[in-house]
Length: 177
Figure (cartoon, rainbow, N blue to C red):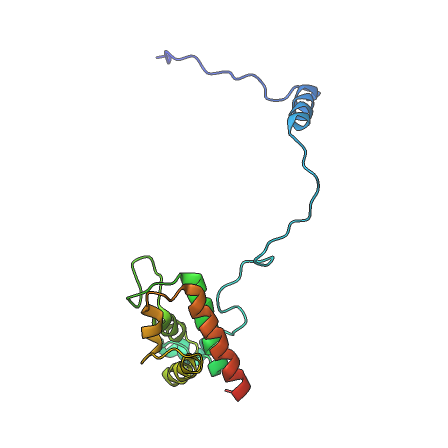
């Protein structure tokens, strides 16, 4: 039994000399508005980089892989912990009143915890970093009982937290820690 449908025959996309296609492309290119050739300048750098770009993330050794355990944390200084905290805060977003929210934004303490969770430093490094933050807060006249109280203050903005972390990191570098 023969099929009741006729086969679909499409016209050829290109002619033998393809002159119609070339003419169509040239006409399209002529219709596109031209813009002056300006160099591309990206204010954030030429390549998107992760928040821990300058630090070496933890790598699993052969023994770690055989024992199926996480790699040992990367050893970092207090200044680097504070810098990574600021970068994580910038990447994830900042929040007040909670360590993190459903959108992944974090407070100052949440950013420190995330830096530790990603394998950078130890809890002792985080505690020592918080001491540096408190020293900067008290030196700048902010009478608070913890960095978290400063983070959650209604007048505090994300830029204030970054500035605080930058000043604490500079202080830690000056102290050599």
